[in-house]
Structures are given as C-alpha cells and as structure tokens.
Length: 74
Image 1 (tube, rainbow, N blue to C red):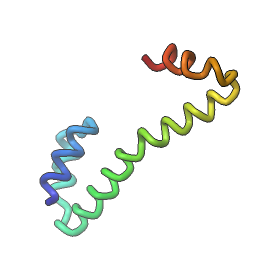
Image 2: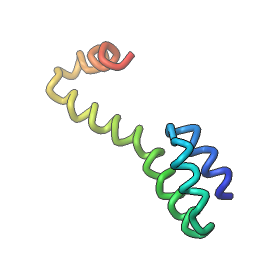
Image 3: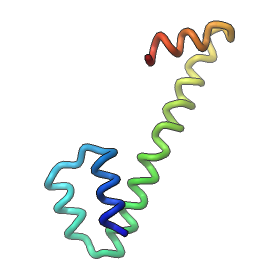
Image 4: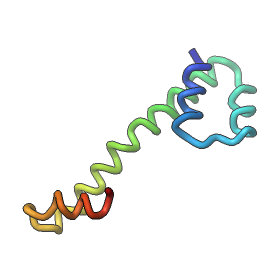
C-alpha cells in the first residue's frame, strides 16, 4: 500500500533521493499516514489553484472571463 502511494507521490512531486530515503526510513504506520497526508495536499492543489484564479477573475467583466483565463493559462 505504501509503495503505491510513494510511487504516486514521486510521479506528482519531484522528490529527491534523500527525501525518498527519509520516507522509507520511517516506521510503516507513520509512513502510511505521512504519505496519505502528502497525497491529499497534492490532490487538493488543483482545486485551490482554480479557486484562487476564479477569485482573481472576479474583477474582470463576466463576458470576458473565459477569454482572459485562456490568455493567462493556455
């Protein structure tokens, strides 16, 4: 279970070899909890970024928001 979580985290975040060694040195229960917390944060990142962008776009007139968002992020 932890190996799959670690592999997923490595794929999502650029972990250094030292970070991976540190994670592998933790007791299994602690490592599982730590990896679950990190994965949760990584997964919620996109939601938080989209919310921040949408909040920032509230100053742009509604008909132009889609165009401005595309110009900024595509």
